[in-house]
Image 1: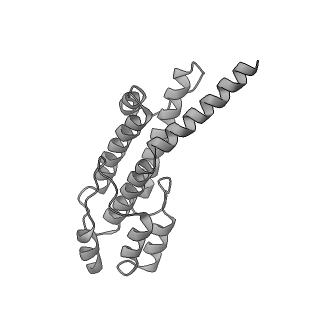
Image 2: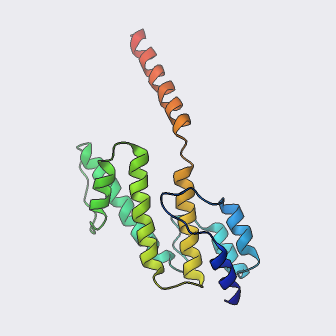
Image 3: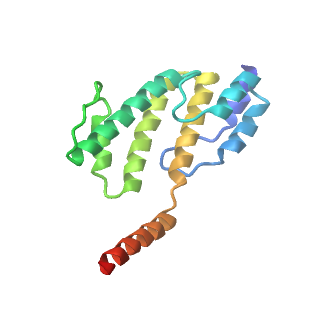
Length: 171
């Protein structure tokens, strides 16, 4: 645990609205000499859907509920029948995201909520595996958000729309 003091205190703070300070392989390299081989292996295999490890069981339960609520509200909006999730704790956050002006804004709202949930799960843990895994989850979430490329997405959308319009004009 003594090696965690330097590692965790040297990591830059992550904020939902800020770009990631580095990529995940760089983070793993920073952890390699400070954590046990088992912890390093768990970090290497970590995804936002992982459920084994410190903090991860509770996180996975929350993430599952969030995804169920997203599915429910999307299907409801389309008028398709869907069973509401048993726990509707994420309903307000998802409603706000669904009402956002654009998909990127919706993702930011969801990311902010996920950061708050990770902070709540980490609690007062500072220099242990719980804090480290919380940081790793936040880094993966922020990397996902900043992986969206507006111009490339817009170009793909225009390309798809042009293809559909061409098919319509041929009819």
